[in-house]
Length: 318
Length: 318
Image (cartoon, rainbow over all chains, first blue to last red):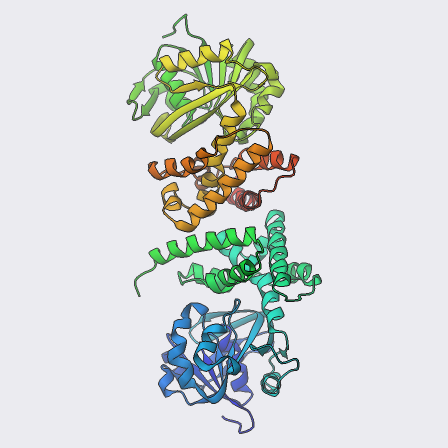
């Protein structure tokens, strides 16, 4: 199953994102180790199944682990957990990552690499943004719906050129059929992604609506546009250049998107904690540092914290 | 049943508000005619029942009408309909109000007297704000929970003194046990009421929460305070003085209030149209006239319009 020329990958969290990309890497012959929680038994027995417009596939056998201790030291650990589970990283990363190995953080939000950097050191951390519609619809079953682009690069942004290690991962991902694009400006990718995540994740929860319902309503679209403006303004204030044409493009892309439940809405509907701090709290902190106001994003943040708290009260005890 | 010394009243809409105040006036001996819709049969047979901390009472027989045509011309027509039913007023007011008679508008919102004024003339219109927690819990059954204060006055605010006609209604209401207070500054009363209605009506719908759940949550309270500031600022910009101490008092009063479902939340839960324009759209228009920004109130307005539209789609056809 392994290919001596490709690096060894650890996938931490085999959900909609880790399952898809990890599965594609494994399919291409890379040695990929999945750290699983609730799906461990099922995936160990039945493997991983992916439905995707890029081609359906089933991997009957994959390397599965229920604990980081059994994982081999990998060249690249891909963090594909929800940020609400970041408290688990100190137990995971030292086991799953070889000395000098790389941690690629593919989580939503801003400055969410900081938790991984605190464990393995900033210089070993890469970050990436995934632009994709994908859901885990059952144990070991990933339904990839639309898009699938990854933009990733060095977390420590002082290098002006694509580093060798970033390029190598990009090459291996591309060989696996993943549309991965290296960048020297991770911050721009993060803020650009927030231009979508902030309005659409947040409003889909507060207004209990799919992206299609939001994009079809004139008032919701107006509100989305206000929020995109605030996010773009905060990016600029933080010294990050995001092409202004991407503001309207973010709306247009969503108009053409399949009707989609954002990850935050699924978390909400399944009474899991939502990534409120990563996606809202951290950008608001970044804006405050430069005295920038984000009134509608602030309000959405407050509304989500209220809903998240109520949702936690309703959850069955763990 | 009638008392020749008190005026004859028409109550348009015998819900939580019209049922309570109309019932109290009738109990005191005034001739009160109720214009009813769905409750007509029930109230005609069983009368009106009120549960209230001011004293429970049952009026086995009241004057009921299912159409404005059978109503006698009254001295005072009290408009206690939802503003979403204001399209019915042109058929009602000319029948229910005698020549030169008065229309007292006890609806929520801003500039909501305009619809009545367009029918009978501005000079015949009074407006009032009710500070009360009251619900209609069944046909002809009003459950008054808390508070009950009315502040009312001339819609045409050029008079500096309490007019004779306002004083007369206040006297009759007070004699009926209603805590009615005349004012020469209706606009101040309206904006002061909006300081409650805007945050608590709106957020109780968007966050699907009771006033108690909102007031117990630190983020919701922070958001409520931001909105109260915006409303107060818009009032000031419109040349209306509302004592700044009322900003914190509005929160404090709600903290001591019985857990309460706002009228807007009840409308939402019962899939009735919400008073979005009266309570949000009109104050926003007033703010825009003076170039004042209300970012969180604007966002709440947009969210409510989205929800109201979706709610209408879910409703069974009339």
